[in-house]
Image 1 (cartoon, one colour):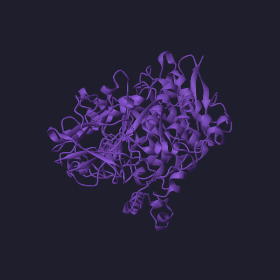
Image 2 (tube, rainbow, N blue to C red; image 1 turned 60 degrees about the vertical axis):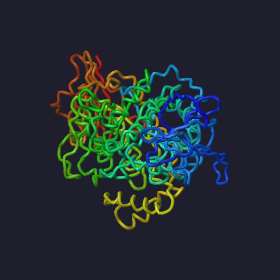
Image 3 (cartoon, rainbow, N blue to C red; image 1 turned 90 degrees about the vertical axis):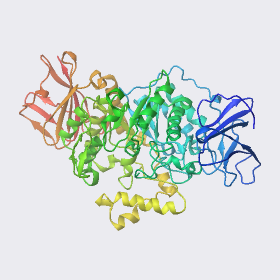
Length: 628
């Protein structure tokens, strides 16, 4: 070993320290001895050098050895075999079962010094799975599309998990090397280049992180310590992580360091925390709040955004820490999605049971975010949600599609092919012009017809277990619960399932009307003072008929907007006993946008407001403003 005074940036992993050396540090309280194994290659017959690491307090081992960028290494525990990759490996060039590689983050030349980050206000999110976003499935290939995404109005990419995992394809939620960008999409510097280019064109990038479980294959943490996990809780997808039990301090440090690392070394603009309801911690400092604070500190003067997925709809997550909250910025709003799907498809089975897709639901969502804030929820036979009053509209994230919800259609069918063109245009307008923060799933902006199916390249017994588990999950939907449906479901481990899910960018032209619809709505959201405002209590609404609603956006001096949505047949309103339909004093309503435009495949615009009343076209949306 090389004796050298060391100043580390992070407490775990391999870090180059100059003069051809690197410092290695690992938490392994289970071991009496840890040897660093430097390898000449990843092959079984590689030449190896063994360097004993020095034991420290609290189960850490560390030491310095000759190394350079690309040096391969593993750890030997108690002199035995096999050797194991670094739990905090920065790169696994041959996957999670093989050697770790030393990485020099300073080799990449950033050009985003002027980038100040992002805040929640005014953002349009875009969920991306790098492996299916392009045919090549790499960060470098995805970079080509960034200028076009910026041009149409996307402001933040929400990148699905990239921590390395076993197999040749997958969604990323079974990551096992949480510090290692998966080799499937390129080298670590390719991810840096993607983010650098995104910042150049004005797009932020946040990372979907999975801090509730690790994948079942290639997870070697137990070889170093059983205390990474706990049996005191039940987790839907694997062993719960130990954030509040005995020996949990280094576990908390591991995940806090992971967040700091992504923000610092890759310039991510924040996180989306997967399934926070499965992140168990009863300590005084909830781990997600601690991670959030550490991430903001790592960002320095850059502003980042922190978003949570939380099935029970616990609004404490986005309340300020001084008010007893966890200090995050946003929450996925499943209520909005479920109402939209019922309205679009009539599908009211399984977890859609408690939604009607009615005008009142969309009005309530526009005003209050979540629909369920503590009332009884029939599907779960218990109360659902917590109060959301006082939370800014931008904190609630509305979507028609996301990775889970598309795949839960069993065959991964996109929503637009399950409904009429008119309804789809109208609900798209409601989402993109609503006061919540909208999220689009990759390809939705041009009406992609390619499916997004659940795929997971597992090996051995896991293949059958995952296939059976997938069918058991989908059995909650009676429409896919039959034996015949089971035989027809796509096989998750089949490469064909993965390949079918890749986008076809030629559909930008083939589906030009839908592309123009999204582009124009995003421009209206960005440039119109009322839709850009996202002002708390700035929107009210009224039910016009069982299929129609109006949202009124209030502005100074009567500079209001109306968003009228009709999801049913043509409606003629001769009686108008609704104050929200009244124009500001001295003015009349004028239509400034309609989904009926032939530009979007509609039949053509007609006057909504006439001398004899209002006429609402069937399955359409329109925006009106006062004209004097």
